[in-house]
Length: 178
Image (cartoon, rainbow, N blue to C red; front, side):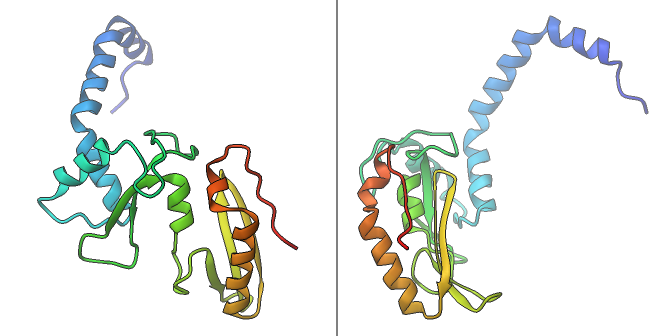
């Protein structure tokens, strides 16, 4: 079955542009909660049935990071103060929500490995430990540690040179120690 004539579709859109745009805005506003819940679940958040409204309300009404008190904004994936729903990836089958925080605190707290230490993981390919952090779209990593203890020591050195408080300063530039 052939698709409608493009000219007719374009003419209809131009004639009804305001009505179509208003419908889209209303639909987005009315369905934002269910869309967010679906997105969170896709990301691995476990939200028990019946608690969806409370989870969305807490997220939408939080205005400051629950870790550092920085004012939060919604939207914008690459902004430092973007509002994030922080959760524990290791908890399955029950509520794994921790806090509503800024993107910077979320990156600092991120632990997606089995080492139990954030930003440190084991690379099976080269049988080495690595330190890795991503900030403002830039990846900083060093993957040459033979032992876990060496990686932890390096992480401590890195954070002492690049204080976590400096993450909130937009002029912060990360340098890896040699």
